[in-house]
Amino acid sequence: MQARCLLTPSPRATPGDRHRGWHHLRRLVGVALVSAPLLSVSSAAAQERPEAPPAEPSEETRTVARRMAEEAADRFEAGQYDAARDLFHRANEVYPAPTLVLWEARCLAKLGRLVAAEERYAAVERYPLNPQDPDAFRVAVAEAQDEIDRLRTQIPTVTLVVADAAARDGTAEVRIDGHRLDPALLGYPNPLDPGRHVVTLTVRGTEVARRTLDLGAGTRQTVELHAEPTEALVSSPPATNDGHPADEGAAPTPGQWKRVAGWVGVGVGAAGLGTGATAGLLGLRKHGTLEEQCPQEQCPPAYHDDLEEFRNLRTVSTVGYVVGGVGVAAGITLLLMTPRRSSEPPPRSATVTLVPTGVTVSGTF
Image 1 (tube, rainbow, N blue to C red):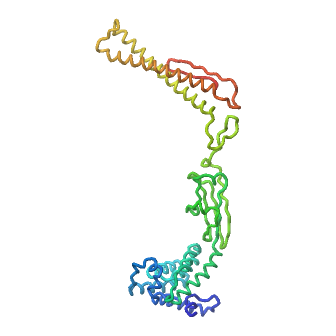
Image 2 (tube, rainbow, N blue to C red):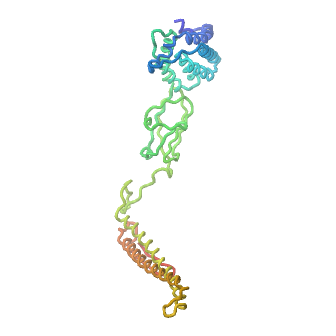
Image 3 (cartoon, helix red, strand yellow):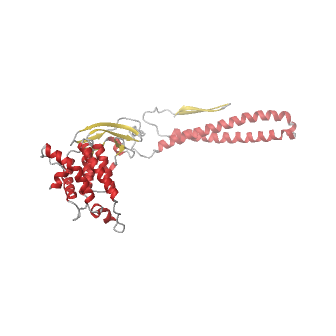
């Protein structure tokens, strides 16, 4: 009972009692720290690795840990909770003790970092007590169990739900204060510290929803994230031949394939005819030159290369006309056979015109 009073001033104590309690706190934490047997302080580590028990801290190490704990107690009493938390944490790293973790949790609670405080309280709860542990350790575990229950009633929770089409998008991502939320936690109360928090929803890397939350102690809130219209969302599906929206992921209809193939055929055919016409014009020019220099179709050696070039142009022109004619004919045929959309007028026609520089295709499809 004496250790409990010195470790934690009772809420019903008088101001004088509390002052004496704080006055003895720094001594109690240090005494409990250095008087505890090493086996009890490091029992968890020893149980995990019995073949390699940790070495006993030196006298200098325990002295430093005690001084850090005493200074941390002074800082706590002065209201310097952040500095006190840091010292309690570092002292525990040097010489682990549940009393130090308990006071680190209390510092975090004073700072409003309730979620982190719950984790430290839980660490004290899990401390494996041994018969040889000092009473201060047993008191720390008992007080942690009592204080964590009260703390949990003060921690706000937010349940996040993604609505609309974004809920079905595999790229949808929810972030709280810039930190990604695991999708498994959607629809479940997530603990947050009191204060302001920003929740965002992104789809395909683009932010589509943002909510700012001001949470008070003990708040229980459910937030639905509705995506605002944006190009990141899936656009309306294309219409089918009957004018109704096509099912998402549906295969193209035969009419759509014919339309695409028809225009591809017309394009390839036009390119072929253009190539044939161009090669033909160049060949005609070359033929005129050869007629002057090659009487009776006998060319001097100086014009053999020109003759070979003329023959190649003639071949390219012929192949271009053949491929172009077949492509245009096939393309126009497919376009004429494509089922007409309900919004299109019934007449269909096509006109192919050969010009010196290529070919033109016009009509209604």
